[in-house]
Length: 405
Image (cartoon, rainbow, N blue to C red; front, side, top):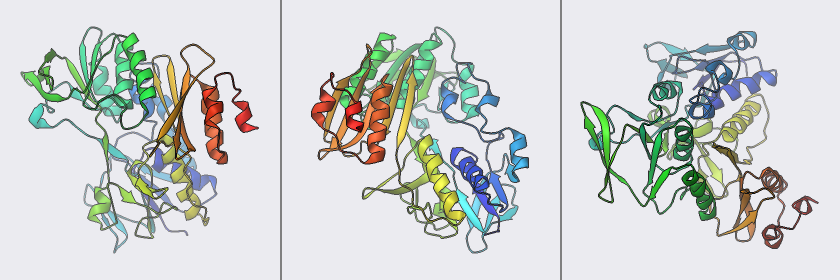
C-alpha cells in the first residue's frame, strides 16, 4: 500500500506504529495527529520522576524533532480530530479542514475519570494526572506540609502517594472497596503494598468513600467521607480509573464495547481502520479486555504495523507491567484475570517477595516485589507456556532455575 496512513493520537501506540513501519522500510506517507502541543512522549514518568523534578521533559520525548523529518513522518500538534468520515476516507479536524487517508489508525488512548462537579470535583485544587499539562499544574501544588487526599487505591493512587510523601506532603488515601488494589491484585500483594505505604506515614482508609468535597472561594478545603468524618484538605488527586477515548469510532459506526473492538491483527470492523493501545478491546482467552499498559500499546501497534506492511502474524499478548513506589519496584508478568489460587514466596532479600497466580491449576501471572529473579522467571515461564509445580514455588529453599531447566 502506498496511500497515506493517518494516525489519530500522538501517544505511545501512535508513535510505536509509525516507528515500526519505518523500521520495516515501509515508505507510505504517514501523518500523526496529536491533540497536545508537544511531540510524542512517555507518560509513566510524568507522575513520578518528572513531577519530582528528577527528569526534564526533553528526556521524555520518544525521539527528537529531527527524527520525524529524517523519517518522513509528519506530526501535526494541537490538532484534535472532530470526525471520521469512512465513506470519503477523510478525517475532519478541529478547524474544519479535512485530511484524506487510505489507512487510518486510532490510537487515542484513554481519559481519567473525574470526580463529579455535584460533589465538588470542579473546585480548584482537584486534579487527575494523565498528560504533561496535568503534571505541570500539579507540580506547583506539591509543597511540603500540604494535605493531600487521594481518592482511589489502585496503582495510580499509590504511586501518587509515594511521590507526595517524597515531597513532604501529608497524605490520606481512601478506597471504597474492602482493600486497596482490589480489582487488580491479590490480597497478599495489597497487604505488602499497604504496609510499605503505612511505613511511610500514608494514612490508608479502606471501605471509605468520598461523600463530597468542601470548598471556600472556589478552592477545596476539606472532604466529607462516607464514615461521617470530615478532614482538612489542600489538594485532591482522583485515581478512580479511566475511560477509553472511543467517541470518534462510535460516531463513525465502528463497532465498540467500552473501547474499540479489534481482531487479532488490530483491525476494527472497518478493514481500512485499525485501533491499538488503551482505546482498543481485544479477545483474551474468550473474554473481551482492554490492557492499559506500555507493553500492550507498543506490541499491539507493532503487530498492526507488520500487518499494514504485508505480514499476517496475529497479536499474542504477553502482558507485563511495573510500578515504582518509594524504593520498591513492583513488577508484574501475565494477566491474573480469573485466578482462583495464589502462592506467596519469600524473596532472597529482606522485604522481597512474589505472589504467583493460578487458574484451574494453570500458572497465569506473578507479582514480584523487589524480586527481579521471580519476575524474570515468571515472565519466561509464561512466554514458554510452561506449567509449574506449586510446591516448588511455595518452598523458599527451592531454586527457581529448576523451573526453567
